[in-house]
Length: 257
Length: 282
Image (cartoon, rainbow over all chains, first blue to last red; front, side, top):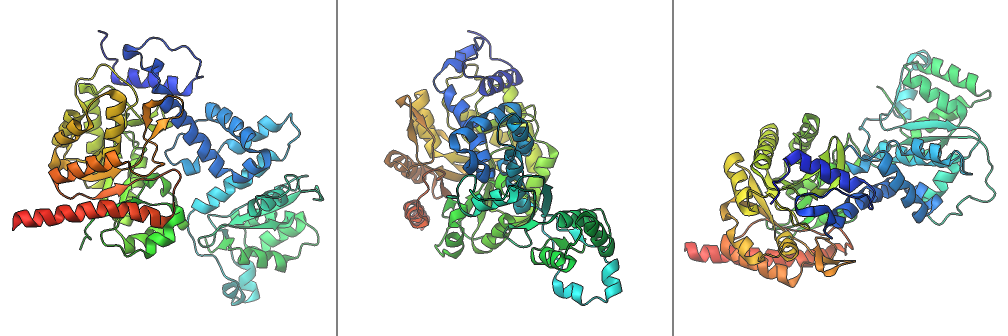
């Protein structure tokens, strides 16, 4: 009878057999476990848990591309970037970039950005808590003090501008209505910004203009409100600053830092 | 004062409101800490609310105690959650689930060697020291005939208890499934588990492998607890007395009321055992 493999050698062989292609020939091991029918239970459980987690974490992307395509892509992602954390609700950090690369030569340039918004939903959902600044707090300040105030984006807030493609409209429509027309006939194909926040227990989303994206980036860099507003106005001539500030406050996007 | 733990249920997000409102005596809820190790947001808020209403149990799936030493950051995060929700029970599995930093989301088997015993003892020691409390270790389901065991499973678990002071989480369904798959007697197995070490019991449903049918049973948690497992459970409780018992359901999850009805069956067996214990004491 062959001696047992040392513990880590056994685990190494087992892990390789779990993650490798199903038809990879395995060297004979003591007990020949990889050839037993029960080994498939472990293989299937590991792959299914990872792919199910990605499906749960990227729901809009799956709706856009369909379940079969999504699970094929997710299996490829699992091979390239298996989870490194037991918290599968956070699995898929690299998926937006992976999808962007994958979609480069195909006619779906928006997929990576849609995946990014799904990812941000998770990051907003699980992000740190903070008390958002209210409109009442700001309106109590004299004008000079208000201009000199520095506010930080809420730790759960995420925002970006997407050139050329109405990523936010695509994402929002499928997030709010799973039955939406996949490519939203009639949609205007132009760039859009998005803001995701979670001031309380629920993730909120709203469209954000180019100036708004610039404004939040400036706040994040530590600029005071008057400087952040000036940078935003430069990026978007004609920007309605009062409306932008009202949006940020109503979405709970800003804190006192 | 710690509420008496009777029969509990695995916490499902869809059942959260119903779980919060239920006033069933002895009811408690178990959850995987991995789903709540977040910086903030509604998940932690749910737990903060639920722990005011019912005792909680944290049942880990990713510490990989039969693997490398758990990363200190992972144990520290668990400790933070334990401190926050003050669970009545904390448990993990006799298994491994990571290799060289890659997480393999399953409870993976290994030959029960002396080397493995030392490794797992050290890992349990480290976790218990960090948490400042004992944890219970669960017997996994088996699907493979492995060679090279120095220990049988019950002696191995008993030795872990002796060396580390940990408790045991006895999953009766896992015993039923493993006994079928590996060809041993579930009743004989259960009869040998040291009664005083058992801190918690799990009950769940199993199914047949979709390809192999009755040749291989799967610990699928997607059906009600089987009559055979109820019989094994009754026999176990008759021997060891009442113990906190969890109904696990992860797939085909029915309405909360249906799970509560299944849970009531375990609760009744618990209460009968308590009465029998009192009668003996009198």
